[in-house]
Length: 561
Image 1 (cartoon, one colour):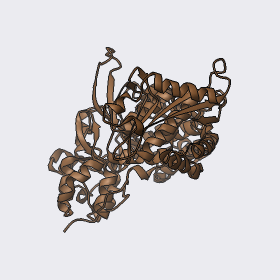
Image 2 (image 1 turned 180 degrees about the vertical axis):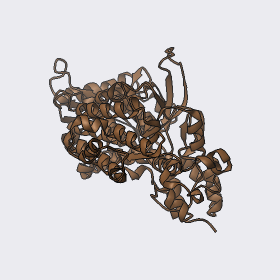
Image 3 (image 1 turned 180 degrees about the horizontal axis):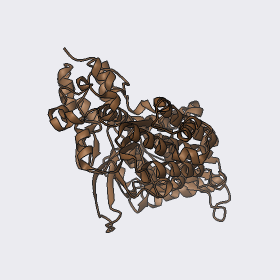
Image 4 (image 1 turned 45 degrees about the horizontal axis):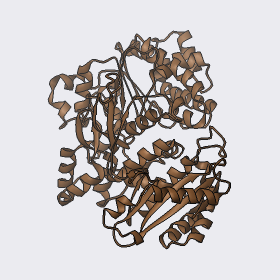
């Protein structure tokens, strides 16, 4: 009889009390404790068990769970007498910033202070005895959502002091989803203000806190040391490329296959592997995302569970508004190829716009990309090159859906263009393409410069990605590749019957071409002069089945010929 799968449960206690499906991750407690690091920051993609592991760690160490051995009996941690004696012996301060998703600094600051206030409320028994003097009790009561910055900065350090005196032991501090407010600050434009506020809070709590035994922080990204960790030289950072805790977050293949056996789904192992495997932590490969696995076990059918558990808006924004080079590399990724790039795992949110390394680093940290290999390919020992590809089939489908969404506001015009292209209706192609360009041209711009002067290639490469996704079942699409004597822009090679198509995009040069028609003519001449059809002819496609179109751009105006 298979256990019940509880979807979305993040309380270790609730899962264990009800005997819900659980994969034993208590080895993390032993590994973390024996590593002896002062402050540990662990980054993993969303819904990878970070919150559940923090709940597990809290309930293992916290004095509030003393005598609750039934929560851990039968799990690996309980095999050791040393750890059986350690359970329930430390005061623990546990917080989460997961809900700090505000649109302004004032509201974000208030939300963080509210979390601190709620944490204090759990320990208001300290006001009843003589552990605190009257002045300290007054300070305790003054903690509020509107407290001064200096009071907020010292609040968790003071609480650590009070608890360590009460219990006669230093405290363990657990902070889950530390970077959620930072991502929101970047998206909503108050990064600098929040970074300054968080920096002082973290310095007091984690660096100059003599009442802290150890601490763990979790998040999706490693926010740059200069932003909020500048004073924390006691920080051990564990990212997706680190060896520590490699199998503590997410499910290993052994764990997934055992679960499929338990639920009578043994014959589905390879299908599940194709969809949900692919995550790599350190040198540990074949890690599966637990959210999709749990949903699959419960529903017993394939779905984009993890990919659809978030809006993915930041990833989409960075690619959509990214440079032509970013879109071209993303085109390679979405067609199953890999890219090679340096990676800086310290995310500098304020510099993400136009920072290709930062964008790929963020996508890697978020779980959308996986490392195939990394080495000093470029000769820089301090910044090795990483070979990256999309993580798995689920992620690929997520990005294809995301690209389709770029044209959703004018989907009828976009679909009209696709249909006109397939039936070789030049008049309709021009009609719909101009509507598509007018509606979406500026949305592919970063906003750093006016759309009228922005590179049309931003739109062009985004549009090519749209073609790739929309026509992938009928055509193999390649772009900007060598063929004949030069480079073509887009080539659509039919997978079955039908015509092959070559598209050449050209921006009007007013010094050379007076009218858009002249630019179209130049584009078509380029296709002929450089013999772009060579690659298709060598594959056995007759000349008469190769269609050629020149696209001429002038601002948001387009002419196709």
